Amino acid sequence: MNEICICPVCRRKFGKQVRLVREAKRYICPQGHSFDISAKGYVNLLSPAAGAHGDNRDMVLARSRLLDSGIYAPFRDALVELLSDLPADATVWDSGCGEGYYTSAAAKCADGITVYGSDLSTAALTAAHKRCPSLSLVAASSYALPAGDATCDALLCLFAPEAADEFLRILKPGGRLILGIPGKRHLFGLKELLYDTPYENAPHDPTLYGFTLIENREVKYDIRITDPALIRSLFEMTPYAYRTGAVGKQRLQTVEALNTELHFHLLHYRKTQID
Ligand SMILES: [Zn+2]
Image (cartoon, rainbow, N blue to C red; front, side):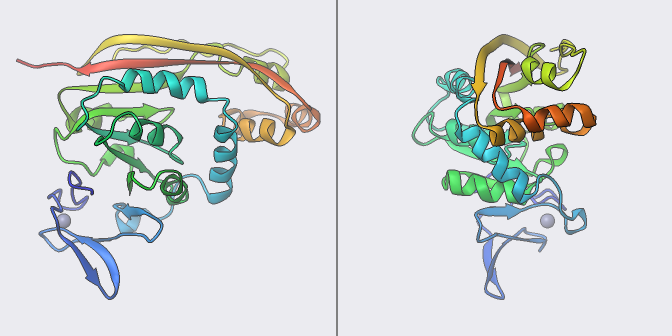
């Protein structure tokens, strides 16, 4: 477990240096920097100065309920199909893994596959461990991934910050990057409810330095949600939760059913070989 992880302070590999210090399990690097292994199933590799970040427990629970309703299952299944030809001993890193819905699906792609998930939110990592105890989970920023250079066969970044330099660094030569991004019609039915003049999402430029795009897979389908609590959970996990005015929020409070498109792109890249 956590064999590829490096100390976020001095960047040396931990190796097998897991010790008990005052009855708490800790990771200790060769330079003596040490990090808690939480009883909740993750290692905290954030520097102590970083403080608490990310989604809180209520946000994580709402997101888990929404994902467990199955509305994102076709997108998850498309992702799993892209990963299905990974070698059985592959190492996969999910950057910004949240509560592990996609991470756990990746872990089931093959026996023997090792899947790491990183997120700033320890509440999300706690939920991810409950969802799939075999995941190797670390609290870390996407912009400072605590993995050694050229250690991963594939990297997932699904609706999470694109830290392309870090992704390049930790991928093996020829390694694969899968970005999940919203398409132009994503949640358009929700936007029609919230806004008088909804706009489609701007197109995403898939150019990424250091990577070659090998496939742009579009996933698009319609959903209907008839549970008002789930509709509000869906709203809360979108950027619109911060941008919507009082009128839109009032419409959301009274709506009993929502019909909307879900529209995604899975951008599948290979790390460009440099001769
Ligand atoms: Zn260290």
